[in-house]
Length: 315
View 1 (cartoon, helix red, strand yellow):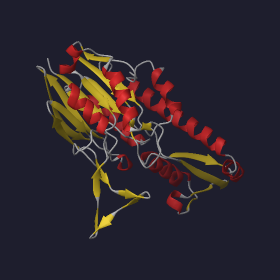
View 2 (tube, helix red, strand yellow; view 1 turned 90 degrees about the vertical axis):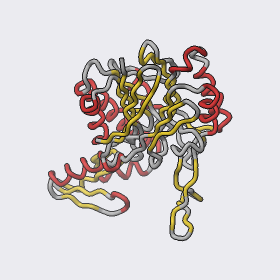
View 3 (cartoon, one colour; view 1 turned 180 degrees about the vertical axis):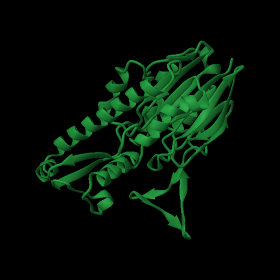
């Protein structure tokens, strides 16, 4: 019997993208729904209430003033789609936050936890009960959110364990990535990442490799699933009027895939590199991400008769 997996990643706090995630299992008739890596947004969006029925915010440094609640509500919905965390503050509260970085981080953690808890509860309500739900953080995510997933009644937190997707298909996972220019929470050297990956393969036996699923956030180096803009001092580089690109995936991930030849590698991290490829017998996919537009991109991976096939989908 065929098993169908919906694999998506990198919603970065976008509520509209998550709402579509909750619809995807019904739309695509899948057995397993996975949202893996970079669940949380990038920043708080302060909205200052100056007086009754007057608010302002400064998205991207441009001041926007709201005199009607319905206009404010529209702006809040828009910022949540883009992955920000809007919060209404008094001028005094904003001034206090500007003076205390620890209070900013505490507020950020609180808002991330609240949104993720709301998302997971939404999944319980909207995803069919027979569908298995797998959710894990990625390199961009604060450690503050892990317990929200671990403690949830319905959702599987797959890190540092083996998940039996079917009686014949086991899955190992890794949220860490190779070093980036952004100094994110869960990144490390290739040497460290190789050690972490080997620890995950040690959780299964050689007999499991043939049907093994690898949920590794970092794509393998040079796989076409890891092409990103070339950066220097955090700025995109250009030549002849065209932006330059380069492979930025993990050598360690590629090495373990070549060594163990699992059935499937499910990756993310590099939003621009949508596609699938083969490394030896291993089918590797990266659904990419367009979270700011509220678009959910994914792959349907079908497991049948010892083989895996993949097809791109969008909502």
